[in-house]
Amino acid sequence: ETDIMNSVSSEQLEPEQQNYIDLFHQSVDNFPENIAIVDGPDQHSYRWLNAQANHLATLLEERFEVRPDDRVVIALPRGASLVSCLLAVSKLSAVFVPLDPSHPEQRLAEIIEKVRCKLVLTSSDVERHLKPLISTATLNVDDASIFSPLPIGDITDSSDKKAPTPGAENLAYIIFTS
Image (cartoon, rainbow, N blue to C red; front, side, top):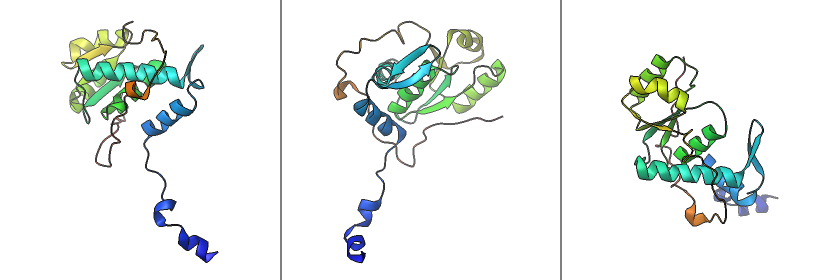
């Protein structure tokens, strides 16, 4: 028994260092057609969710120049769009700041200014109320071009947004409490 334990190195006993994006990609690779999210009557697969997140991550990177450690506020109700946004921001190794859109507009505006975010991802209703209160760029994810049904086709690893795994020095998110 002792010989067996001595033959196993401590490196082999250490769990593999993975973040939740790595684990999500494993689910996409292993179970692409399994249900990843249920949003009311809609059910979406891991493949669909990954395609949505990749599409948005590309848009954030190219149009808004979101880079690792940039802060991105996400002020959306719970649902598939919220999850897609969280994944997209994380795939870029940026920092997401989730805000409850039902909070008072002035409080949301104060937090947005305090975190010095690069961008606010939100819905048309919230954007309409926030836009006059903030100087930060906004992206309305209700816009049909953002989350229009994407042709899934052949999604290859080369089209996937797989940012370098953030280290312990990188933030993943910032949470504000009352």
